[in-house]
Structures are given as C-alpha cells and as structure tokens.
Image (tube, rainbow, N blue to C red; front, side, top):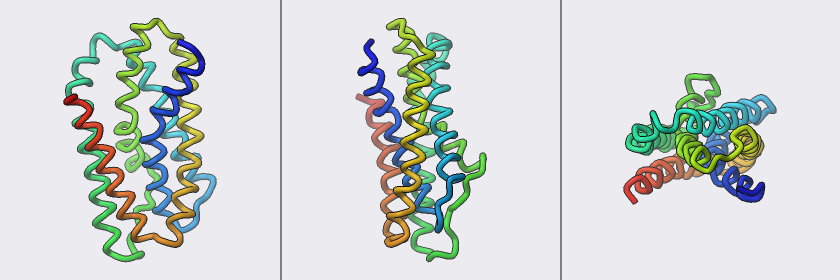
Length: 183
C-alpha cells in the first residue's frame, strides 16, 4: 500500500467527521480555538483508534461490528440529526452548543465505526498500522477543526436553515452507512 493510497483512505474516512464538525460549528455563535480543538481531538482520536482496534481485534469483533456497526451509526446520527432539525424550528434561544464528552462521544463513535473495518483490512494487507492510524487521525483532526470554522462562518448568516440542513446531512450520512451495509 502506497502513501498516496493511505492519504486517500484518510481523507475518505474523515469526510463524515468533517460533515459533523460543520454541524457542530453551526451550533456556536462565536467559534473558538477550543471548539475546533475539541472536535479535532475527539474525531481525530477515534479515527486513529478504530483502525488500530480493527487491526488488532479484527477477527474477533469484525463480524459483530460489520453486522451491527452500520445500524448503530445510523441510529446515533439519525437521532442527533433529527434533534438538530427539531431545535432549528425553536429559534435561537436553545442552540446545541454542547462540546462535552457526553455530546462528543456518540458522534466520535458513530463517525469512526467504518474505520474499524478499514483496520481489519489493513491487517489482511499487513499494512503498517502505526503509520496508517496516525495519518488517518491527523487528517481527521485537521479537517474536523476546519469544519467547525466553516460551520460557524456559514451558520452566522443562515443559522436556522443551516441547522436544518446540518441535521438532514447527519441523517443522510447515517442512512448512507446503513444502506451500504446491505450492499
């Protein structure tokens, strides 16, 4: 596996986290470095951790995660997305600007489940998992931090519509994950 292949995989895996980070950026009136770093660390950390887990635990848990992982990701993302859409109709007073572990953990897990399967594939290909996991984690960290800023800039002007679109995007990402599990 070439470095170019790894970069493409890293960017592909980080797209869900990037989209969710944009949605998180929509939720804050003033984006700060802390918001960007929080998303970057949660999403980048889980995107680095999951392929490593897949690599080392692949045979034992791959069947279970392959079977239920897409459903778990769909439920988490659909619930979060539906809540965003619902709150977008309630005005500006109740924005979901929660960056706590309680809020970030389900998002990080939901957006990184597919990385576990990639880790199983890396084990089959005997790829260097340290390099792969670090590259995936760093790419996701960077794109997630940028996504928060993109969401905040876009959201300032079109907050309610942006939250609705962001919620629908999360639901669609979950639906895509679920549909792909059946193909």
